[in-house]
Image (cartoon, rainbow, N blue to C red; front, side, top):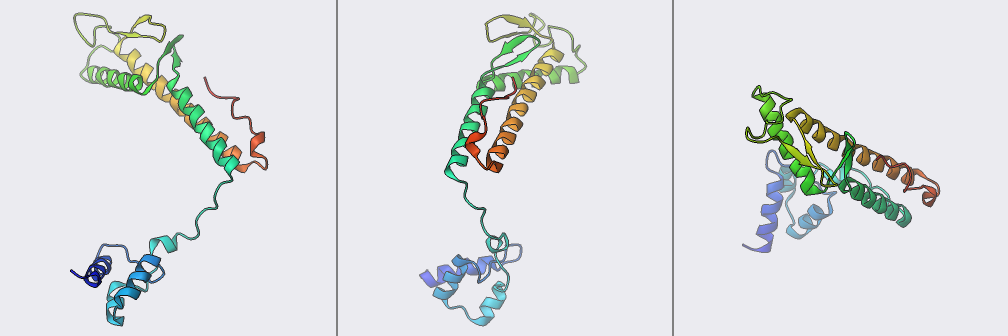
Length: 192
């Protein structure tokens, strides 16, 4: 297949039903049209009168100043550090690294399945009839937990992560909007 035939196939694919129409305004299509030299009939069939999605979207957002971008990166890092740093539930601190969150979510799914099958939500033997279910806290204390308590632990972890995520978003919005972004204290006020 020649280069011209390849480009024609590409351009014809854009003209098929259900595909987005790209127009002569699009640099990629304009360059291809110039190379292939389509006939006016081919251009009409391919729908070159339509603007492409990139052109319809309008001009790109202005770039962030370096100080704003750098502060937003620091905010994201602090958010992630705090998310992974553990959270408090019923007076005990629980680890919340990615593997810990995965374990909590898995235990909560099992607990919900137990309760969904009409299991007693308050029994400690919901995971195994041979032993009470317990979770190891950050300080290595074993905490017995019912199925409903495990679900509540999961919900507390979700609320903790959500609070940090939204706080970071608000902090980044403040940095972006500030006349002097470096005047925003990105260390203060984080949820615990």
